[in-house]
Length: 454
Image (cartoon, rainbow, N blue to C red; front, top):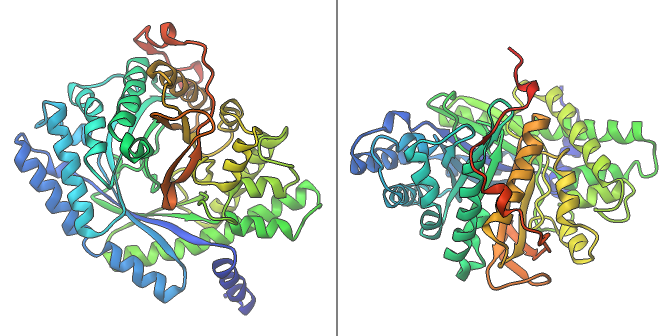
């Protein structure tokens, strides 16, 4: 039974503390669209997406209006195009054409992003996947809503260093291709280790091959709710702090599950998972950095930051799994610099560096996210950053990722501006020592010994 107090509490979370359903993401399998003819493949992809997702946006808007819970984004994820396009697409240009087909379909149904322009190359790559990676600069510079991801490693298979080096080059070329928009293409490109199949958040969403024909995944976010809850127990001991985060995460997840089930019912698509991730926005009061500072840090980046983030991440997961049997995706705390005003302020004060952020990624949901670096940063250095994050994910059996933006024509202290959910970011300094010889050795780094658990 829901009590009047709980109704009032939920209304307060929505009205004053920025609780929202960050995204309803419809996953769509394109395996039945596979064809040996590029034209037929593109037509099948467009037709299936527009047929299944035609009511996605209107349904999300209706639920938001009826339930009073903001549903900020409606999105689509599809089967990795590196798999879907293998039979028909023989060149990078042909892959880029599929990206434009995805973009047209996304525009037609009204979603803000479509993910799944992806390749899964943790152990090796097919010619098709190689061509998809080579196509990334064109694909991301000629589309508006397409998001791309490449999984270069896993705990089970190790790290494909050839793919890592290719992605260092792809990130740099994508920045060049979109420099007129502050290198926006790189904000829609993420490199993973241990990528999950059911992540509803962009830019890393794709519809895994083990999923059904279609599914509804929901991502819930509530940094403001958690911060406000912690303000009420200011100065209390760690037991109280942990319990407060856990109970708050439980309430947030229940709200997300309600929306997820209702969206699935109305769209006639099975419910998949709820991803409870404290994903910030540029708005004041919607910041993960503010949560860490409410715990007692003078600023995010101070000694103790990694422990505070670990505590937050763990308690969010504990609260979430008590609230829903189907918590999935990434679930935890995100630390994207450009999307969190508290992180931006810490960078501008010199209190938060890439090295500290890398340490924090050992215990957060994802990794080095939405970080701007000087435009002169080499492809090899970017590959080294990707490799370091992949190593953290591989060894610690967790998802890690890199979404880094070489700001062409800009240097440390300058800013890049995307607006909206992607925010803005100060250009951060990068270690200038070369790792070129190391990352260009080629081949595959084998999986760690603890991967053999059969």
